[in-house]
Length: 284
Image (cartoon, rainbow, N blue to C red):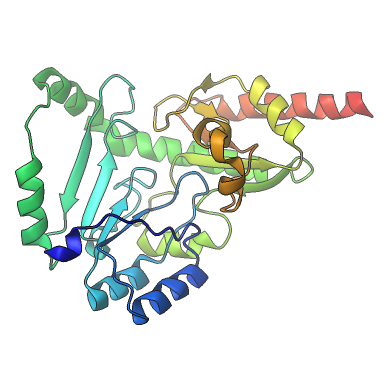
């Protein structure tokens, strides 16, 4: 019981194998944690932590693993058997329509902590979900898997286009690219894709500014809508702590795109890239 009474937080901010080595060393040296919280994949850099290794450590040292699959979605990835608690923002793509809010908590029935967690969560439960909201959510989620497939395809095409422009783009963060792909594929459901979130780091800050200003999509801080939504992630989320965020790879001029279902999205992105090209030409 006491292991769930915690008042301190320890951040392993990159989720790399090296940091899991550090976590293991810390545990071996006597540090005890109540719960480990993570995402799969992470927002905004779309990295994928080794949930298998975390599960082994959790079983050995008795802590709870809580994972958020909002970005990966339950359609694309299957991670419940590796965590104790799975949380999802239903406000995001599960609904997609941006007209209702909700969230879910699933306790793994095979978890050694299942009885205690359900008891504690049950004591906190207040059934305050407005019935009309429940009806809207049920209507919105009926075609969740169909929308995911369409958005997966859009996002992969977008990531491929951006990664081909290394004259402008320093790095594209997307689960199908880089070292995270193998880990994502470990948990990817057969035939499914890599999700709806793409983050871009440009070679020059001014490229990011011109691209964002000329990208003809909705702008805002949320994600997981049926329509494409872009934001200057770091400036919105970490404006007062830019140096701290940069230590974890979340640099100042990131552009995050929550990909939607538009048929002409690639054309809109190409137009924004052309605006960057025109600005470069005008400076030379």
